[in-house]
Length: 303
Image 1 (cartoon, rainbow, N blue to C red):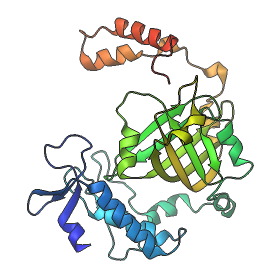
Image 2: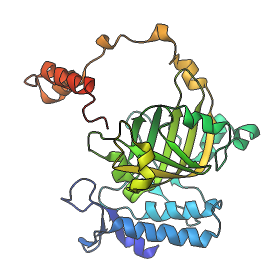
Image 3: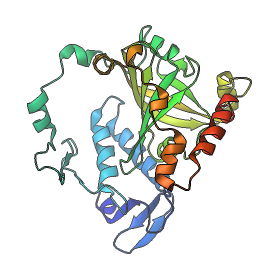
């Protein structure tokens, strides 16, 4: 831990976005450009010390390692207790208010504890009922974060059942062509933790899956994910740690599936109009929207 306190796993000054490096804060030099391998080494060590996969102490230790190694571009607010079993507390401030919650004790005093039945629904594998959410879902939202804790939330969509169930604890999600920013994929390269939310049209319950992801280019594994004869170039394997249904309250409160509340798309800004608001009035929003609509009609870049 003392050594980790002397370095920072982040980006050196002037590094390109997403270029992970180990930065010696005392010397002001790059120690190594293989931060992901180094962090994975520490994660493996923590897993070994824990002795079993359901021991949350190892997770706390892993989080302590990652959070203590703050460096340039890293979140500096977390402070870790000397005891690795103790929860992480965050000292935060907000310019709008001083009335904040920064410990779980404060949070629980306000909202209370979850019902015992709620806790029992969390499983480390699928069953005959939860499988149906994956088999019938055409839309999945995936959450990832980088080593600094900067989060990304991204949708993935395909014909229902596009996420393959390899077994009760392993999923395979095909990665289709996108904008090539690769935010989720770049995050997974340095932090394998992933969260998924499976949505079924017309259904107000959803399925949440949390686990660890591995990016694969195994052609044989990806072949069954082909659409129109085009298999994906890569996919995301998810080893499940948690799987449980999310109650309907958010979807009911939002009236998400109530067709009478659907918004006319013409009342919302187009992609071109959003870009013009960023780029300036010289940007040709109409041409951009027309060209994009043509690509979408022809499904250019879909698969």
